[in-house]
Length: 599
Image (cartoon, rainbow, N blue to C red):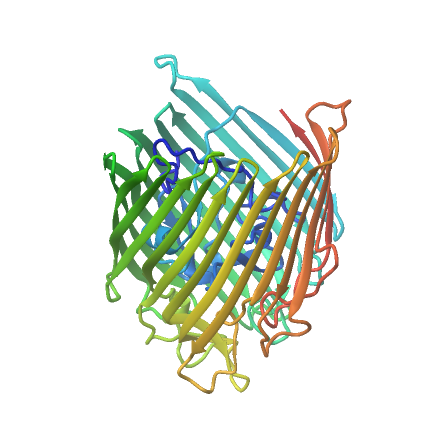
């Protein structure tokens, strides 16, 4: 019952959709799965990792930076006020969530919060009775243990109501794919769910603790850095269908995140930082269909945060955030097979410390159904979004330290105009978009070669021209998914002394992805994800500015043992050493063999 997803299936127009994930693989190779697993091969996003995606994932969309990308579960954006590096610390088992939807343009402006470019959105899945246990080993002394299970029972007083319980425990460790790249991860999560034909309510608790190391993790000074993260999340979510194609969803959460950063393993007392952030939030979103032709799309969220830190100043330790968006929608039926949909509305963003902002949200969508039941959708949109900087960027020292803040940073704004085309057939789907985005006062982290700081927060104005192409094809015994992205940027830092950019100018002008799921036989399944990129030149990057990555998985399900399989997986098949973040070493190859039993 997703209330976020764009409702393109209007009444009598049947939408034919090829159900396929954006990547071939869903499971990682070097640890247990997380909501960000395998996003590095998703053509809709660009994931830049330290160690691996499940260790520290900077998820960027359409050439933005990690702090421009939000993560929503239900109606609520999960947030960390210290830094966007921890936005993806989500202690939820992926079996509990839907596949990610990627919101850009109008959808991001309407449903995202404090994420000016894009949002990775998840919904709560219905609990299913069953479970699995996994044991894995691999090179670099990798080992994994995982158990997950769920059970549902009917509520006797109702013919359709069901109550469910689901839980999981996962852990993994290894010496890492390069020296001083070790990790030790642990996660436990569980939920209770009440569901019937129109209502789903989930009460969730998750705990996650991660230790990992990496050379030059955040600094270019050739030291071996470590992080120890601990995240707790309590969330209540309620979703309800009502009326004719109307839905409302309410979400409330409390998130606590602790970070212990050590600059040097050799000298841990030399520089280390402790941060504890707490966030409480209440959110609502939905669609209310007033008449057959008029629908109101809406979202609102309130967040309150606080931080305790050994490195930030004491005069900026809490903030309240508010966002309300309303986008009315009108449908005009042109004929039996065509209709136009107009949306025009606005969002209001404010905090108790920053200037407020009204943002325009608008688009026109033309949907055509062909005689073979295929559909064509053409969309023209213009939208605005805004956000404020995190505490590390704005609340620390402006004159010293490894990470130098900037207390003059103002609210960031983004304007996006886009032309999109989507074609749906019974066995294939193609989505293409041409967009132009203006980012004003975007917070970036920059570097001067004569500076003692690792990086400094500075505003930048950037214009980004982009083209996106995404295609899915279903064959008799295989599925294909392919993507291409082109990006071109023009930037103005207003400061000629800046030598390099860690994030805003770390993007691929050209990026191709290709995934294959091949059902080789009844007992063997092969999954392959590939990515080729040509990265923009950066003065901090060592080695080549292009890379080719492959994630290969082969699953063998012996017919003699029902519900049992063996999975051989190989990531970074060609042992690329490409620096996803300039100056930070890339990951090396990782192999694993995992035994799974499902019930």
